Amino acid sequence: MRRRMVLAALLAATAGATTAPPLTLAQQVGKAEVIVRGTLGAAVSVKEGEVTYLAYPLTVAETISGDAARLPQNDGKPALFFLQGLADLPELKSGQEVFALLYTRKQDSPLVGFNQGLYPVTDGKVSAGDAKAPITDPAKLRDAIRAALGTK
Image (cartoon, rainbow, N blue to C red):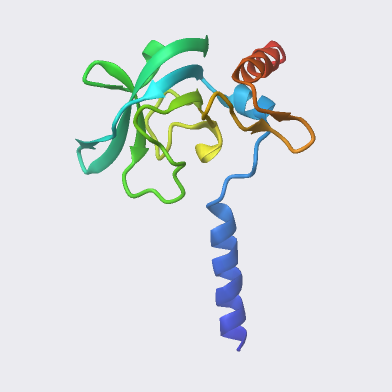
């Protein structure tokens, strides 16, 4: 019985260690190295040594912060690289417009806060902010990001 309790406690601790704490938009902005608005292309599988990524080409329409040229490249163009087989990825679709708050190096996920820094634009609206102050207008999201950059 005691052994089961110890094992359950270890499993609970391990599970807690693999989840990222929720970040506010301002915290995400503070951690982001590049912030862009762009459109995703169709994912392609890219193998680098023993590691396989899903690379989503990114057509950058607007750079809000940082240098988009520092993003990882695939076929000479910016791309979002996700470790293939990674659980809990956000739903990504070719042709999807997004605001992306990004790291510039390849890792499990390029999105700040382990997949928190992605804001899809659907039918001209986004879902950002919190329950008390939701942001649904893409222009207001851009303004909120720029305001947070002022406090960075």
